[in-house]
Image 1 (tube, helix red, strand yellow):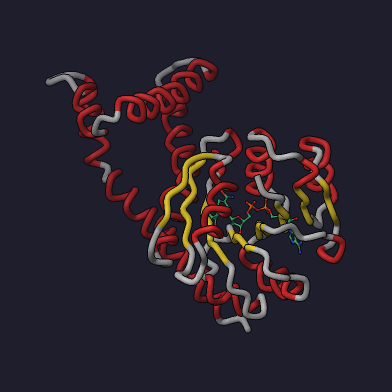
Image 2 (cartoon, rainbow, N blue to C red; image 1 turned 180 degrees about the vertical axis):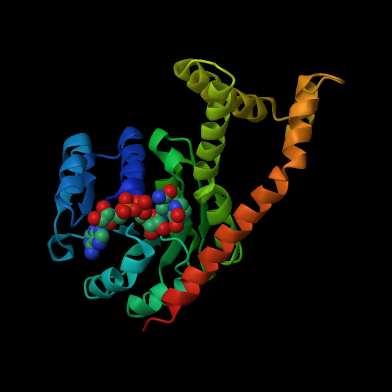
Length: 271
Ligand SMILES: NC(=O)C1=CN([C@@H]2O[C@H](COP(=O)(O)OP(=O)(O)OC[C@H]3O[C@@H](n4cnc5c(N)ncnc54)[C@H](O)[C@@H]3O)[C@@H](O)[C@H]2O)C=CC1
Ligand SMILES: O=C(O)[C@@H]1CCC=N1
């Protein structure tokens, strides 16, 4: 496994670092530049990685992961540009396009964009990856191996598809938690005790997903098997249809995807 430098040690960086350490990367082969003292201390205590308060202190390993918020990236990239000497740069920032990042990095060409998600924390993530044609197969494999430490990976051929990935699986855990919260609230509204409601909601999402993954069967077929003619599920699904839940999911993904493109446009206008 490669030595990796992280710029930004928040939520997602911590998840990836956890996966790397769990899959055998030596903590001392990972350095993190993090301006927040609490976040820095947590990473050092939890994983034993090397931490720095400032980019100027970093060694910069062969692979550098940019894990700051998109709005912070122009400033961080400008500082990093002074220090780069051929490293592979992997950006996980939503929306930020390779061409803009390359410009902020002073014309750096070895860039891969990645869109992971927070289930990476429990090594059950899924990451979308994109690299421009000029990026070598070796660099792609290096980037992929880092993200593989925390779950599955998919590659997309066109950069705009990464906005769709962001909207589906990057933001997706939030939609799933929203559905879990809704099912739990509905269970409580039926008079079930809060602890029981939580257990039923969580295990139902987990069990249904595990069943779909392990059986490899069409989700529509699995749904039909739950739906007895004239039974309870049929009524429940009809209520979901009447409420337009399918359309609402489409609208959520569309809105999130458009926000990704918009973020790219907004930040791309910066010098
Ligand atoms: N939260 C999520 O589910 C996902 C987030 N992303 C992307 O990952 C990136 C990070 O997101 P989160 O981890 O959620 O954010 P976060 O806010 O938890 O982490 C960002 C970290 O960067 C640090 N930071 C800010 N300025 C810095 C600087 N100049 N030098 C070093 N560190 C600095 C902050 O103190 C913070 O700890 C974002 O660009 C986001 O678009 C991608 C996929 C999923
Ligand atoms: O909400 C966001 O912008 C980030 C990107 C995907 C998940 N969280």
